[in-house]
Image 1 (cartoon, rainbow, N blue to C red):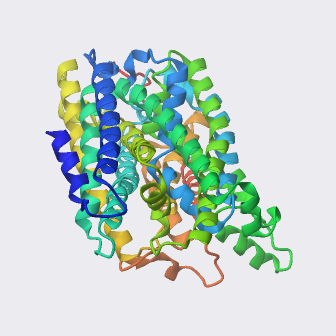
Image 2 (image 1 turned 180 degrees about the horizontal axis):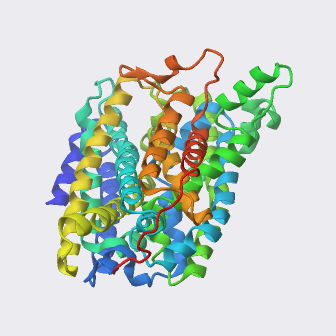
Length: 546
């Protein structure tokens, strides 16, 4: 049934009389993608065949090898937003500025490895928000977990829009000149999320990690093939230099400070630019501390390792992969700029430029492989998010409030039902993201996807830092207020404008600078810490019952 559905969707785009595409070309690419799907579903279902307890479903019995955890982290970080969005950044900026943020991601990993991981193992948590119950109380835990659930659904849902984007580019390929509608995005989002939800529901975290290993390998292979093909099409690196005039015109580091301006103007300009060294060393460090230290999605992978030392090894080594991966994706975007400066740039949104090249310019068979690579990045991030959402909901809300007497069978059933429901919610968010891009084709997905985290994760990180770095500061009820103030501060201090809803910049003085998204988590966490520190922790139960 699935083969028929997928093949009909692909073939419905194709007129066999088109000179630009042959029946057999489409058929071969379809077979390649279907073969990938069959392998991923098979591995996912096989890996999770022995899940009998919630700990097996959520943590894999803490038996996953460190190298598999490492690959899973890389796959989780390299989402579809990275695969298609980062080349769009390189294509648009003609620079490597975005890669600077990888500096902070590496620094943050070292801090997380020696600050956050040990307490998670010490208290034997399934959901990392259980730590907040031990440290502060149930109110802090419930609020933090709810922030994660809300933010992760939005964040992954926005990224899923890129699954629909592949279908849209195919539509443009086979039906040039015919307008794009929301239904074209829907099918890509729906099919990818359905398959991912299926194997995650059955296989749990084991399915996530082992399919991530395959997906990371396919993703890296797709990068190498794409760069090799692009270099061949443009005639080598010498022609890149010719287009830019000199290598100096390819910028690697964004200037942080404009000494020709007064202090206030120079500071405002620096804070408004997302890709600077200050944003890399401070903003990106705090952002990564939030995403890799206080987000169940990422930390849950680390908790599948056998012990603290293996988890630290996986986390730190994954940081070494970030910089070359970021540079590789940006290189694809720059090479695309060179290629289309000669071939003639298509009139499409920047988000679609790499997908357009994949569909129009890559040979049959390899095209199917790279499409599978794009889908792999989507499925890797979505599967982990689904499992983390289900684990957090089941551990933090279902068992303590809905069914305190739940046995292993009831807990796994609840986690699987939650996985399915979260999958539906993410489809809805993905469709809304697609609708936003239809309204404004100039939107790029990286700032949207990461910006969503910036609005809420500052409050989350701030409370975790208070809990990790102090022993008596922070009050269970006042922590909730502190997190709310931290999240609210980002909206006002960042002068966030929600078109058609509210412009928070209206409430700020004119002289207050625009602040770029890499600083959002830093702002939110600092405000949260300042608001939480004056209050003292009350005596609470220090044990988690398992």
